[in-house]
Length: 93
View 1 (cartoon, rainbow, N blue to C red):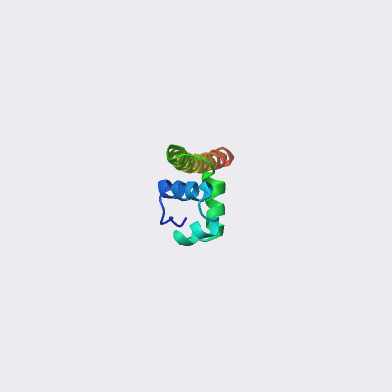
View 2 (cartoon, rainbow, N blue to C red; view 1 turned 90 degrees about the vertical axis):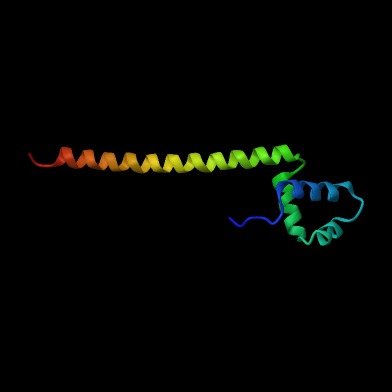
């Protein structure tokens, strides 16, 4: 996944600036050199959260990725062991 040039703290600050309504949303996007589509995506991802929420979300996503990798590895090991057992029991004696 492509890394953002903005950190979570910066993204939340930009979203708060746009939400404050001091200037139109498209002007805030131009000021920070982002597209309006990016601001909508950020809004859906970070919503009305705070910086601590964003950091917690990233930590949970990282743990989820690590656990999915573990499950995939264990599933492969399980399939290999089952295949080995089938070969051992079905071999002529």
